[in-house]
Image 1 (tube, rainbow, N blue to C red):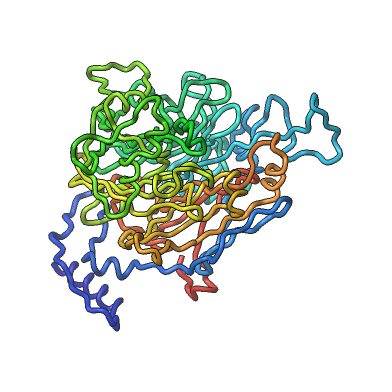
Image 2 (image 1 turned 180 degrees about the vertical axis):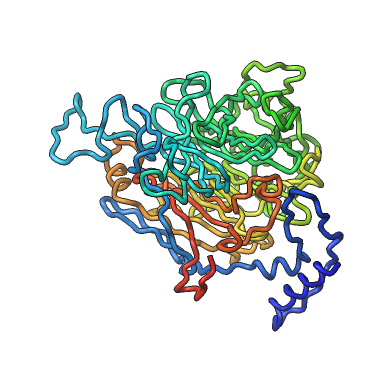
Length: 578
């Protein structure tokens, strides 16, 4: 009891002088000493919230889009950026076809940007190397990692990511402690069987088996199937296998593990446009949970489930209707889902079980529809709300929407997306509830990657796309939401912590559609202390950004493909804390 009392005294001292009255709940039990385990500190929840409060100044406006103009990234003044990797970095362990962090050869060694003065015709256009778009980041602190140089010490701090564009996918590791020549290691650019790695979007660490997981949203340009979930070893060279016979094909994006070893997956597969509502799309994507047979070996199979939401009348599930795009786009159920303060009952429905269905690759989207799961309008990524006392009971996910200012769905029918939360008694519970935290609008749309900055502050970044950038004359932004706030109140708004700019390479690409790429995109927002144990699962501890080893990363996709670390602006904050 002595340890707990001292810890509470320290916490009380930290908030001394507060004008607000503070009522304290009881911490139900002390931590139990277990040999070999590092245990999280558990504070009274009221103290924890106060101690870890984060205030960021709102960036007043997004960067405007103007042809030929480069724009800088603008952050809240309390924050700053540190470049950790850029697309032109030569890879440690490069192969003939995969040589750079952000560029890939198109069969020949093309320049990274078009060469000025080079003649161009429709037959022989000016070419540039394809940009590979490093995507979702996963930060880990690991011992004994290797690279292509047997004599080099690669350090202990690493940032992993898959690449989602080019004629094949690949996996890289930014060695945060390393010099320039060893800064980024190519872990793999082929599957274990020699096959092509499909394009990759999401990633996470799965501590129960000591593997990385990567998700693919689309087929590679070589025509390699649909999106798959990949199982990868963390060290160099990485061995990568597909789990398409276990989890199936799908538009896989976000993936997170819970404390029971289940995987929560978010899939993004755009639906059909309506005939009348031709600027809007039918909801066509699902939220999944995979329950493994053996969490130490995911290849042994298990059950894939999809989320089913019961309509407000409590009479039937909200489902997909084939060949009824217009009716679904403007349905009452879709409107209800996108109405503040509505709370829906949820349950998980099994869509595939390897014990009865075998290990043949299958279409997870089609299976979810057959099982009467509930579709959403392009859900992208999800994350558990952190709690050191009651973790893995609340899962937040984003919905992108139609990424078109002219969508006939408007905000009311989810045309600009939303942020939702699923609440359950436990991560393996079969039932729960769904509510909407935030309804997107034209200024806050294309909601994509997501990460908790602390237990109450949720970072959500946009991927609105070039069309919407032009329509609204604004590039993407990153927002901080307070998950305890009531956003149905019109004056309650999220805080813009990042107004993304556009680098010179992306400005060129945006002007020349044949080059591909287009405007920069915010992706890979990630907050972690790198703990590779089960205790380090995202959601199991309350983050303390910029302290105690917690770090924040994001990638400015397209253009130069820069991966940044967000750090504290010490001049602004007057702090010398790491």
